[in-house]
Length: 330
Ligand code: TYM
Image (cartoon, rainbow, N blue to C red; front, side, top):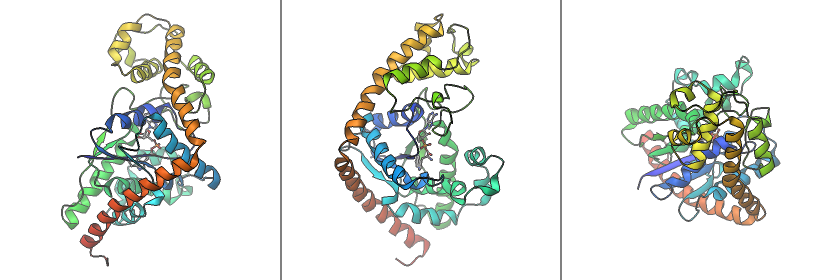
């Protein structure tokens, strides 16, 4: 069976971009792949975190996975810092990665802004830890949103570098970037990605928002004054409109064309009402389930402990094989 690895950072609330760009697809893939879904807590440390808040956020992300439909009888749920093989492989991969490859990473450039010298080494080297996350499982497929594409390309390059140096070992993973929702944009600015770090809460819909908040955020979402167009070509010229129609299509599991055909000519106030109703119908049950799961932390902790056991068995086996190839003392 082909193997999947993917993960999310436990930083702040998960939002609609995380759900539509990744989590919703993870659920669909469970029957056809052996899936490892991880809460990547070490990645969260690339920004300052309060320890108690981080610990709670790790559990909350695990609850979100289950509430969204990850079935723990089919898929393995685990927390990155419970599997030391991830970080050990990360070091080995860093010895094969030219600085030039790292310097190309656009996400680092965006996050670092002008003050590059003040940024932390972890934020810079984070794509290597991500490569190790994936490669230590010999994952064949990695379902992610569009923003992770460049990191996946780096992962493939590093895997090839290892295979060339030490003999073919790593599976070269394929990104799975799926559907209309691979890049959900901010509700306030169609040129900016929906993100946890945006200072405006109105820019995103959080998985913890209640129905009234979702309704309000969609009503306030930025749009232009024109009604919905009837062609994809015209839609593509209007980023905010395109974002809302893409969200609708992804929520309804329908192609963009079909949604446009049905809603062409409508005003955005009418369309936004439909979009809000659909979003509420899909998200509120997830939010409620998350709340129930959070009320029983012992159950979540037991699921994560079982997941770590399985993930450690696999990753330690691979790490031993890798160390033997590299000539380390095992
Ligand atoms: P993170 O935590 O930023 O995001 C988790 C997942 O959500 C997707 N995503 C989006 N998709 C569509 N539109 C958006 N606006 C949007 N925002 C986020 C991301 O593409 C991602 O799939 N580096 C990764 C975490 C990671 C990882 C891994 C992923 C660490 N190791 C190994 C896959 C495999 C990250 O920061 O994702």
